Image 1 (spheres, rainbow over the protein chains, first blue to last red):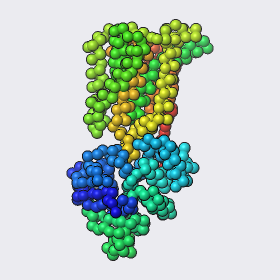
Image 2 (image 1 turned 90 degrees about the horizontal axis):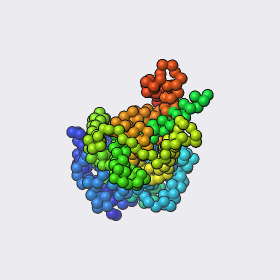
Image 3 (image 1 turned 90 degrees about the vertical axis):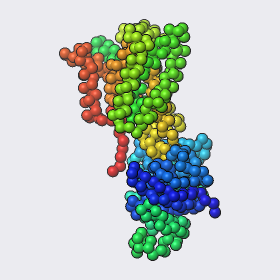
Image 4 (image 1 turned 120 degrees about the vertical axis):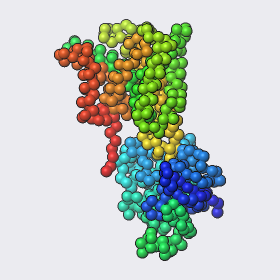
Length: 237
Length: 292
């Protein structure tokens, strides 16, 4: 299997405070990987460092290309779609405009129109509201819109920051089912950061556990889910 | 009744000046989320450039097009050189930058072209429009050009890729970068467009107020007022706001005893404050709907 993303000795800083202390991990092409950890462990920072939204050192390579000297928008243009914490919805714009924005770097008009229809097929609720201001959608609908917006890029890799945050359990189930489907059918590799460890481990095939800015455990999601320490600390049984 | 109609007409014709300037104000507000205090001076400088080109013998419309192009590029250059380094600076630093820019441009214009008042030609003529003494063909032409610019802006923002990207960059820069938009260039583009619109405004206003380095001072205040009244997020609102301010100013001067010409300005500003108290987003500004 080929490596899609390779992160080596990643250290990130907020002003004087160091948030990541030398993170090393890699993602395989086509994989669905989850990054688990408690509050403040550095999960969000890791995703932000990949997109160069926080000051960091170390080497990040995407398909063999180093990312560290690129600006956020140029990293996105390589095919990395980042759904940030809080979803990043353009609240004053319509649902459809949000989807068009996801494809703003693409030039193939026909493909964009077709992809918008494809998103409406994945998330019928978005179709029903396509002229509505995105800020009026519910939390779950906004999360679906954020995932759909990211897919409009036709990404090779999708980074998801706590997609389950603030959503009803049933909505989360649906969302994760669709994420699995996207990963299998569209061959989009996914890196998902979650606090809901149980769901994330059910969904993922690879998992990393991160504690105070360091990777403390890695392996197949199944093995991690069966690990006694993980069960006690993150799964609660 | 005759007097009333005439005052409305006169208000519309001065309102056209404010509407034109307000459009430039809204444009820059969309791009940088602030008001640019040097906007009027930039427009004045552009107008001088076109005047100079005509002095050198170029026809009006050639000078017009060249000036618009120059202003667009100059607007981008000002952003790249002066405001891009300040992008993370506190707002007061940026305000100081605007004021610096204001005096730099004002003094340079005075230095190059001196402070004497100059005549500026109009392509529309200055005959009475449709037989009315209160509104000239120039003012009618000005209203026409303002409405054309408004229409152009509407189509640009609603139906083009770059327009959509600019709106996204203005409303949520971080999310905009995450869909691959180069937000820094969007800001520069906004400066360029605002400078170009301001140049059109200056060129249209100059025949009415005459050309000199301080010609835009009063106009810009009314332009701000019009933009705030109509809603800083709405080009359409800015234009309507411009006409409303013009009409209200004239009616107040005529009908409210003791106002006359001297108190027109404070009365207009009082109107704006009252509107803002009742409707902070302005008449046509988009109030952001938030689910809580």
